[in-house]
Length: 269
Image (cartoon, rainbow, N blue to C red):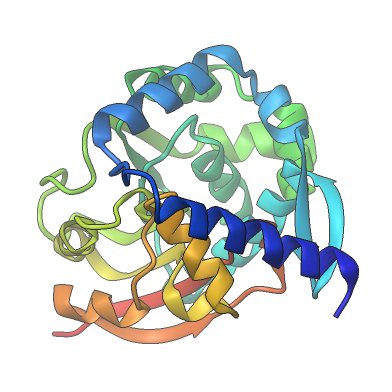
């Protein structure tokens, strides 16, 4: 085992052990909203996507801009949306809307893209991005020309709503596919409500890119998730919310601190 990886495990284990001797701070909506509100106000699209972070790519530790990781995921998300033949999608925790804008470009027959976002600033940022698309950033995320990006975005209806993903947000079977990307991670206890609301809204299926227990390849990663009070349950939990597991995969590109898995579901009935 390399020295870098040994140090990585050491620091995670040390943080976990130290947490045993201090009060555990539960994750709350108010805190999550405040953090994201601040990020959307202080960070431009360019700043957000060009931040450098550590990632594992096929087990190799690299320092890369965030847009490379997002592009990797978005290309996979587009494949899943196409697999379902979806014309309408709903994103849980849509943030500044970049995922939905990119999918509108990568899935040419998409007609409607909706987002539920906890933060009012996130909704405002998303609406601004639709009105004035960040072409440079979308070119990085999709590899498509500016002209084609503009054409495809203008053919899609976007709608962003401020609200919680654990509360009713759509009429039953009103969208083809519901998805999330690193959002249910903020719900260590209420995640089943999010899965249930997604099941209610979706007609064809769903996919969730989240830190499922099975994606953590060693106990140190689970310790880290516990430390920060993140979601860390099994992907099988979605079955309790009316979903049938279609597939589960652990992508080759991962964040430094913990892993995510992509769960693809279809309605159980």
